[in-house]
Image (cartoon, rainbow, N blue to C red; front, top):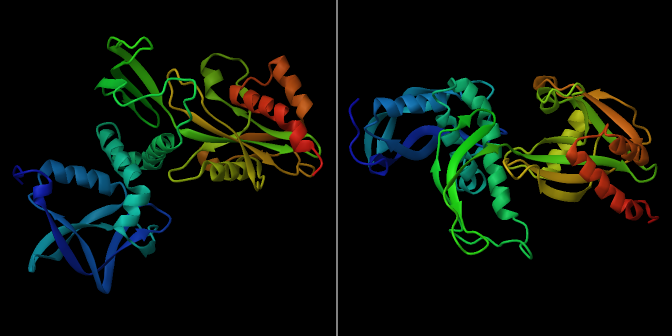
Length: 359
């Protein structure tokens, strides 16, 4: 293969593939193609593909167990031979008929961003490892979309305008499950002047949903306990931590649904309606991590301490049910030392009267 002439768009042509159908992969945000008699698949053919381009396509598509096969397509009324990626894994079952517009509307931005992130890890990971990170990369782009659409009010703080902050340079940084971004930027100062260009690093994490189950009848709460690596690497001799139930928000998922899912996984607790508490940055000085916090009003009278967690995620979690006052005593003694839980307990303290009032 030689050097391809022209830009990418100049090498793309509409084409059809007879006796084939494009469908959603069941329960996944991407499509598959398969032989189906009497159907026609519409798409684009990329011509004059370079060796590097083919290697890149094989890396990305091969991670999903898609492999190239020769097919006969129609381009402008003429038959041509082409290569098409077919799913080779039997666990990729056919879902509903694929509609490109639906994908663009629901998943396009996340999928394109995640694809760039996967390819940026090409030198570091094999295709299968990179593919295993893709759901988390999608979730990070979903967090960006939620941030844009749910920005808080600016009644007292600075209201940003286009150009107030300029990112001038981006370095390679570290790309794994988490990312460490290195960049240089300048910004508009409060006195109206422009700051000098400065270099910083940011820890790119995820959005998480947190939920504190509360029984207003008995005034009891449910907490979980697990080993945490932050205290471990800080040389804290007591790395088992009390926390609220929490988990990463999956791509396209409502944070409230995340909270319900995590409650079942981590404590076996089925939650119904949730009451929003606060939406906060965990540590805005250096991290993108963002918390969607909820209160789950639930009957805890029949709940007993349990051990839960997903074995696939190496979770070892113990649940505790205790009176609210006991939890606050643990805050004052320092035994409860996770900031999000303390914040949520104080929020509950301010709302207990309303929650416990007769209906």
